[in-house]
Amino acid sequence: MPRLSTIIPHRGNSLALENTILSVLENQSDDCEVILVHDGSYSDPYNLSDELLIIEEQTDNPITLLNVGLMAACSPTICVLTPGATLQNGSWITAAKQISSARGVGAVAVETVCGSSSAFGISAKATKDSSYLQRGTVDQKRQAAVAGPSLMAGFYDRKTLLALDGWNEQLSWENADIEMALLMNQLGIHCELAPVQINLDHTAVRSHNNTIVKQLAEVSVAYGVSGSGTSTAMTDLLRGCLTGHISAAVAWSTGIMSAARGVKPIQDRIENAKHNYAQLVEQRRASLERVERRAAA
Image (cartoon, rainbow, N blue to C red; front, side, top):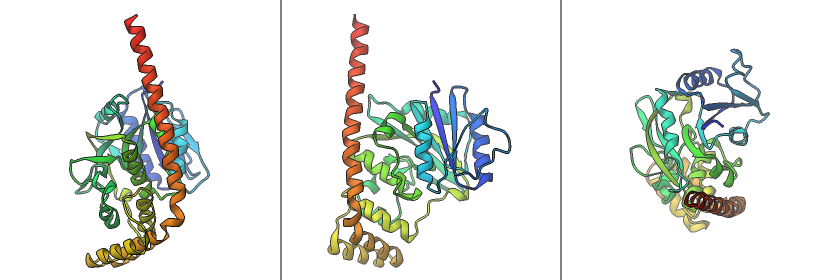
């Protein structure tokens, strides 16, 4: 069994993808697997099928591509890399060792570098204060507490992801990692920060348009980070206007107002995840007890 499965979802930028594939193949050990899930736009011009597991999935949803890769993975640990990510050396694999079910560490974030800008996963503050979500300041910009990895690059415990039913396919690429961090925070699943640096090209920068902002407001309400209703919407609208982000403030407030219609699926997801993760924790506890009894016999 490989010890690490690297999933690369691909939707059309072949140059960025090939740079990432080359970087991974040059910097991984033999006990790792690489899973490329694409939307039909990759023709494998270099005949890499002997070195990669290549899966074609006819969808324009990048989160679906990720979940298909998750279901195909065999390793206990998952690494997600966006096309355009390149690795500096083989030390990036060591981040996987920080994942520990015994300590409740289900994910590990890494430093991603794009030009002169660095990010360290999803900010822990953003999972507790809706003003961060409204402004789009969700990426941790310095080495501090993180709530989860970004989908640009990060590591996850595979069984934990499966218990949580993977990433939410109803959300945009820009919001799915934020929602996953919120979900892990709800369940007490910890994320650590690894001393690993991964480079990104300009195509991997997180977007923050009004559609994304509106959706993130709905997610914020579902997780209780933000209130709902007219009063909250008007307060948040004023807050956004005072900071000069009028268009985004309108989108956020619209999302707050419409959240009542969209929170049910997310709330159901949270409840299912709580049940399934509790079962996983119990299974691991029982397994550990069996191992200890055999060792003591």
